[in-house]
Amino acid sequence: MSDLLTRLRGRGWRMTSQRRVVAEVLDGDHVHLTADEVHARAAQRLPEISRATVYNTLGELVLLGEVTEVTTDGRAKRYDPNAHHPHQHLVCSRCGIIRDVHPAGDPLTGLPAAERFGFTVTEVEITYRGVCPACA
Image (cartoon, rainbow, N blue to C red; front, side):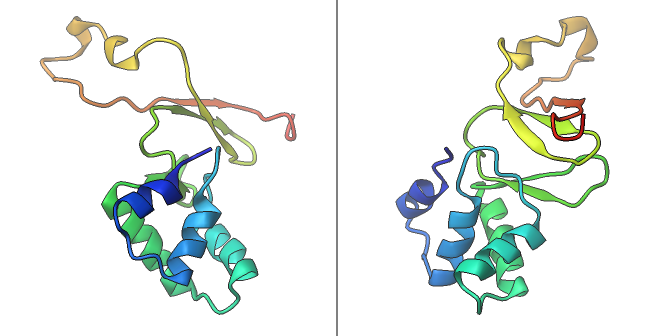
């Protein structure tokens, strides 16, 4: 489970009811919702929450580095609360569901020196693609 709410409280982030609901919707393992999905779930808990508030809150969480934006295959941006836990993504090529995966080994060392072209590699993004059980 993600620790998004704990991290935000630790930062002293002003927790209005709208912000809290957005954070609660995002908090969890394998949560990669679009902004519209976040809004729909937040509205179930707090019917008066506006789409603009959700978009603004998501943008602020991304700027804070507490949530990362994930895009795959030109689909809508999705928001990942596991910003502080190293992981890669497994994506269904049919329905687009995204799951967090934790492959063995250090992906930073996986690129041979001869293939780095003098770059100092600081970050690696790997996306595994396949078909989920529901779509198979």
